[in-house]
Image 1 (cartoon, rainbow, N blue to C red):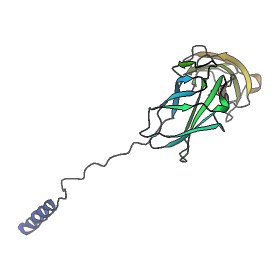
Image 2: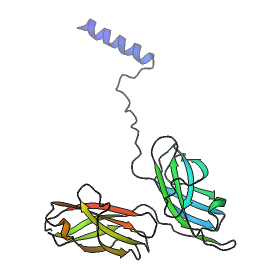
Image 3: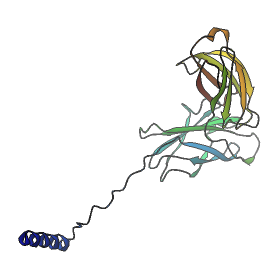
Image 4: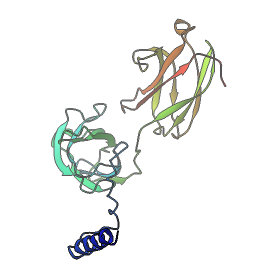
Length: 239
């Protein structure tokens, strides 16, 4: 027994002298993966010259090309403006020149789209107010609208509660069969978002969808802003 203890002590001393820790392994660092959706807001505009944006929740170490296009395009297939790196990600500010082809446009869509294959992108739009040397700043809308289902009266009506609605936009409301996301559905109403944010609306369930177990509902902008949201509900009376 003494011989075994002596061997263990000798081994301990050898390991210690070699700089190897034997008290336990240091905890490994856990990498926190990016989550969420990148967005950006419009900080300021100089008519026909530049637009400054501020990003929110951008992934780190990604590269994005910047595109601008006509209103309603979400910047898809737009004019190439610049390429930027997201660096540490999160929030940063960048300024871009408005392309010659879009000068004089009242509203312009702008899009940031990854070039690395990550799939991340974000888009917004701004007023390119027509006027010589006009500049303005704005607390641009950020994020995207969503809504939850507040209550249902079977085969009669559904009440929804919105979140983060953009201001002064007009939306049409559609209902369709489950799995369609409401696309090409039956129009059941329209509404104006007014001051935006949180609103409550009630819509009738169309006769063609009565007695279905689940119904998809969608609202989408009619102004060309590109904003939309969708959800679904059980066609049962609740709460």
